[in-house]
Length: 361
Ligand code: SF4
Image (cartoon, rainbow, N blue to C red):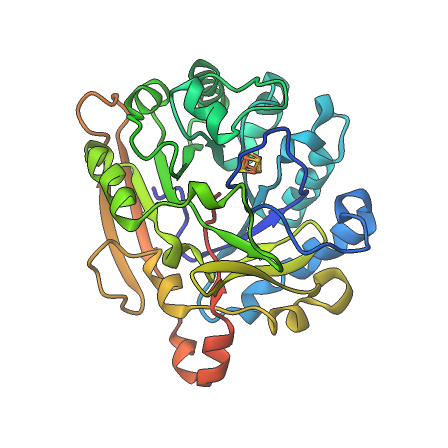
């Protein structure tokens, strides 16, 4: 069974901007708002989730559910041993019928969280960029005192999650940048045995004053990104890579203030574009600000080299390469190509560029 259900619309909510780590390439920063992040206000995030429930009406396609992917910043900052708002938000989303997933750096993910929430999670994602602590420190994938999550702890998290929910998809996310493109991530993959490994090319996101001096030295060429992928081709059975073009305007993302946003091309870099807060103006108006690239959207649900065709069903077997471990995965993927798309006006299709399914999460 495909763990990323066919026809499932994925909305990524970056609940908060704060993070315990300091990755220099981090693009989880948004145009400032005078308002406070909405996780603090139950009425606002309840309204946001209610509006997001309506999103399938505004996205061309045939949907059989919505997955809410919780991201940050670091969402586990709101866990606080079960006393913070994260559990309440997840419980409410679950009651509303959302499928749930989360992407975290894992450092604050305690056993209590996994025991409580793994059974409800469709996907548990952990971000990890290197098996080498020195490289992680150079990237900034550590807290202010240099503490970072170990490979062993990531492996434990996945083990515990699978014990609580055998059907869960345990996923690693890796961002390839100037510090880690030469790294060998086999030790990480062999220890953690992810069901899926998403590999992103570092995305340089500019604010009004351009790309930051922290990010600029981490940019890499397509050639180096391809070199990393080639070096890890033994893991192609679980790997899904995205270059900058594939990452932009191809996700549906909500920021900590309840605004849709996109990373749009800006010269050689990218910049955030935000809508009005969804909980204030409603999802229809907020969508008008969002761009959707129908082709990228479709491509995310087809195999490389497959031309997007409406209503394509395919079976694929995902099996880690020899030496990676014994987990075998058989999943069915159905690409539901919006029959309604052909009725959209060209400006509307262009405007909806960047919608999203599946995110970093
Ligand atoms: S762990 Fe994620 S959110 Fe935190 S700094 Fe790194 S990239 Fe940003």
